[in-house]
Image (cartoon, rainbow, N blue to C red; front, side, top):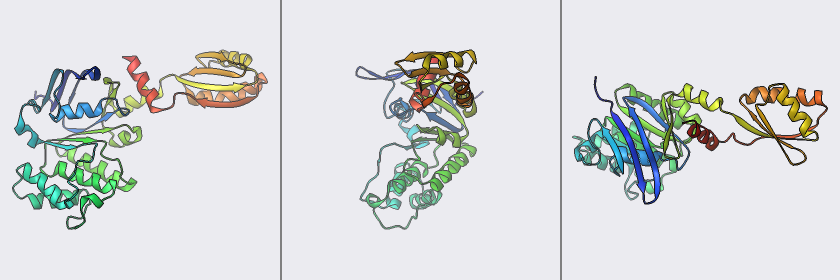
Length: 307
């Protein structure tokens, strides 16, 4: 059996007293893999270690069986789209992507640059400087320079930022084509709907730890099945709380103040359907129903807590 394209083995990364990544282990093979996690979760640090831009404090990182920090030749097999804008603003798109091709030792840099720009739907003969481009245009130029040398491993950190819906769809399709052709494509995002479009294996990174991994449908099921907390305001909090518990609609309740009930439920859709009929049977008036933990950050906190 061949070794996976990427191997993370008990990797930890410190920045002074800050632990950015903590004992993370995973393997990634060819095709598209998504890194999902909130901002500040450690995704960019993971990607920087994959590219050899920063070494792990402890643990081992291997790309194509080699150390990306020590093996300089390995950089020709890696393409990187950083989250930050890393372009030479005084150049045209063709000049910038051609320079990337030259640095990677491509035989015909201009022809390769034109081909890469065509893939991302950017005009190669545009004479404007990159500094004048919109965020989405600059993002596409960054993607073009990452694929101009046809690398075996493509690392894309939040690559869809700034793109319009049609461009996003085009890029997702292109990532899949690259993965289907044998490249190892790693794409990070903090947006759940973006990752769903990738339709691929997902690694969930939260608070510097690997919180979950698997097929997107499995990850989505974990997120949807987690306990939800809601706040309900009513004129009869004790009576309504008791009725919700008796009906099995809530798994836990807590009275707060004179008119609030905090409710935990594992089936939020069923709860929303049942709460009004139960309130009517109880004679209670409903003033407000609000979710307290429907944000993505709470999802990641739940996944971390499960480990």
